[in-house]
Length: 407
Ligand code: HEM
Image (tube, rainbow, N blue to C red):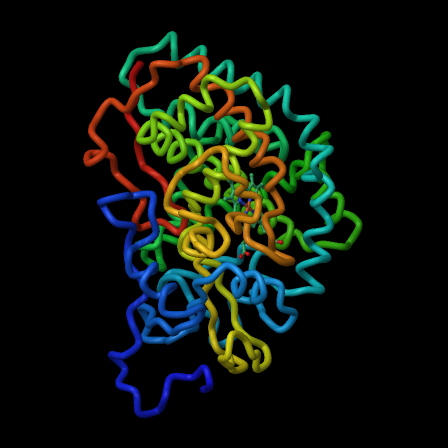
């Protein structure tokens, strides 16, 4: 059988793109996703625009396709499965490009994200986390953990790394929130992107005139040397700034909520001073929560045979890594949060050439946060019932808008 939908098949036979995570357990992928996974590794789904890309639900096929040389991440190619009508307004640099240009641009910044380099940032991250916890403890309660802690930690870290003034955090957090909203209009997304782009372009200009010891100055140096246009430099800055704080912030807040809902797991983490257990808990929470839940998106450049199907050249492919991370063939009892399991094979950072550039940094931030917050505030608790917590069902990155906590 080929992979295309049979000509005779009624359009209604292709299910809609699965909806939001269930209220029953807001940490689990939508139940329809589990059903699709059980029915086979590949199927087709219908998107908002009527297109019917492939939908790949199992871990092995997701990894095979994410590392396939004939699969493209270029959002401008016909057949690419677009997230929302608003997508495409403003380029997000190399995350949406193919090699060799993707590799050329990625190489310009990857030196800042090696394990060794970011390990050197651990003491600074620890200081940031400790200071924010001091402020939390000295302030009123209940308090919104997102605003007071989850967003400031990665924002302060990425500002320091890039050389972006933290005083501007309200501006860039608001605009990046708009850009990654699924429900945003094309006009609003374009405005938000334009503002962030202009801001980063201005900063690149400043770094060209007056270089400092930061990543944006290194990017600016490539402009000066004629290896990068000023526009591409600003776009890269937008990508790094958004990716650098949005994702980690959501992992901090959602991870804390998941642990508060699983007190025995929280106790294991809080009562252990074994850095290996903390590091393992980070991997397990990345697997379990998979905040980049709307899936890796690609388009086939040639016919690809996989799992008894043929993905035709030009057909879109979506790989929802949240269900890939719940593949029972790879992670036994996958819906159970177990901070002691070996979760290292998860695909929460993607796979293949686009695998998350910032993952060593994200790991350190999360290890410091999960290893510190619950030990320093052992009575930390949600201040409202879980039903009252607003989840980001309309975001390209999953999380909570607010998490009122007390202690
Ligand atoms: C827990 C936090 C994070 C998660 C879950 C996460 C997740 C991901 C995922 C799934 C991808 C792959 C995209 C694709 O294949 O289409 C990705 C790519 C990327 N991430 Fe992260 N990320 C996190 C933190 C960070 C941080 C702190 C940075 C720092 C700047 C960062 C920068 C990037 C960049 C630049 C890419 C594009 C890589 C490429 O296309 O070659 N991420 N991330």
